[in-house]
Length: 266
Image 1 (tube, helix red, strand yellow):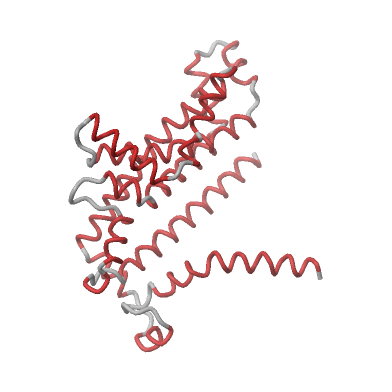
Image 2 (cartoon, helix red, strand yellow):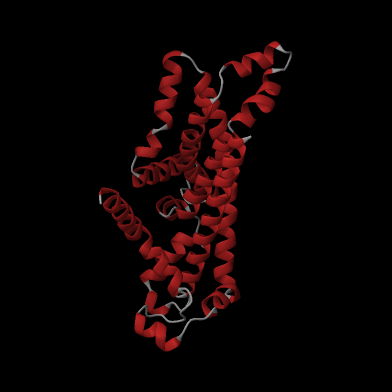
């Protein structure tokens, strides 16, 4: 009986978390501005919203711009986060602890505070707070610490003598880093990379405060479309876009878990 209630409790929590997402996926097959069970059965299910999505040139441009931004930020954040995590891990004394603590501040800091601070900084230094460069830097500020947090545990799990052994066997510091350390923490790097992509795709506040005029990400476009939903015919197609993003993320997470298990079993 106790086990039954445990399973029931977990199932209830999962249902509470995923029911809105499954509802979104379901209604991505209903071409109607009104979301209701009655409309779903009257209109029927089809791929019309997906067709509208891919035929909407302006909306697809926003999608590709957002994906490019997310990939650019993820690559840069992964490089910076990997080097930062390795530097923090091998740093000794108070310096390493201080840098580690400082790297976690953007994680716990309110995003609106980070956005306002970035606006003030760029306005003071470059006399322009809204630019593509400012938006990339803003995304890096909020994604890089998560990459660091993804890699640090893998470094702690690694045998600390491997790097020194590689140096003793004649490898250069860079060679030992590439051939010994990086392969050992590769799963953490991949996790940080995917997390950086997700955070960049999902971000609204940083993008809204730093994006240049005429540029939109998916999040800023969705907010604008919701604000003027009565006049925006592309709003229903956003359900199809959201469903695609959800499915892609699920496939990536499952693929990453399969890769990690196979790697651990070797």
